[in-house]
Length: 286
Image (cartoon, rainbow, N blue to C red):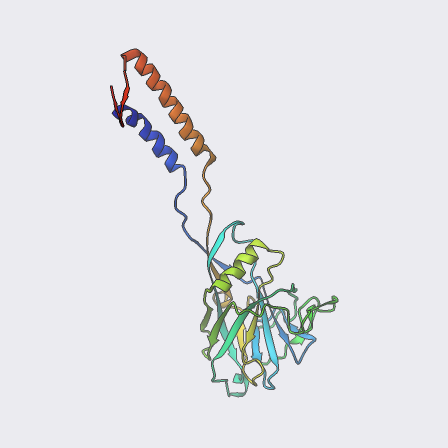
């Protein structure tokens, strides 16, 4: 029996080592692919390549909403399991700051998964200041607007103001400290959104940023976009994922081949050295 185990042990160890048993989480940071602002009171205006995205009410209480998308499928392997997702954005301007009376009330900004495709047009390209731009610019096709997913492309939103899920994927309370980071923490809904964007890239359109006080005058927050001059303050999506362990096909073959080879060795050894084996109850003797 000892001799049998001495032959068998290396085969078992090799086979077991070829079979992955532990999966480590992998973390990646994604940069935003596109960011835009749409304006209710300026339905033909947009900002697609400006330095900030506006979310909330202007001085008349007219809503601004932000759209943001990340190319998840291009950065995470297909078949991966998303375990965590967190959005980080930096504050660039508070409503009312232009007139010396910045909004002092922290505002809740929600993420809602977009269910309608939209384009990232060049409106606002080259603008480097945020102050004075909260009404947007005349939209350049195919930029998104309040009424259209792609301006002048005969592709309206089903609902003016954008088509998005009513479910809140995550939310953040955004205060008044300019250049500070605000985080939309990982939730089961946010993880499910990112998983959907990975598994169904043709249907993953990012999120709508909605201020819960969007009809309150001077409630907006302007958050830096992918076109902000400081790359460290651009939007970031932090994602953790796991890859499913994939057994190596050769492992099973190796184990089986090893056992067969061992049997042949034992037969040859038995014939040359007159090994005799008897089974007595539950034990082997020679």
